[in-house]
Image (cartoon, rainbow, N blue to C red):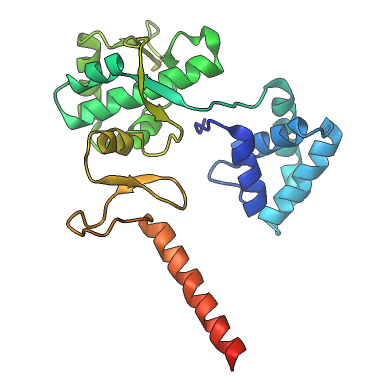
Length: 253
């Protein structure tokens, strides 16, 4: 499941932008929960999902989507929306991570810690188990390496007493064992590019885009002018400015 700290805010943005996202089933469930939390009945919510789907995909066939839309509402009714202000990282936890040897394994440990704390809030009885797929974890940690290397990093964390594996052979869940109370030194409010956020905290050339909020690498660290936008947002803003300039010129003629 895509990690979202404030589901209703996220759903509102998807509704405003008419966006089904990369995982439509998750989007529909969260949008349904948003409507329910804003006073809609399950029946009315189901109708609103029809409208939302058509706005996102005008050529969609409602009969073909009927089961998926029904399921989204039924799931939304069962689960409350997630509303987390931040995931806090303590000084003691960060020192455990920083003591590891290698940037990739540090980013992996940091990401696992963030996920473990997230799931502990969502599922209080979860005891800091992480059930995300390995591919999702590596993507969040901004790690691109071989399966063998991934396994080695997990094994190193296990030997360090920082994670525990499930006893079930077919269960790939990981329990994080280095959660410690203390003063919070970092507040995570966005789960995109957690690996980059770890590097940015330690002074490496990364920044938070002023438009979309994603943490990304500074394009030209030697440039004294502070980079404000990620490349994708910069391209969109530049296009918007060009269009606005052309329209102003036309209106002035």
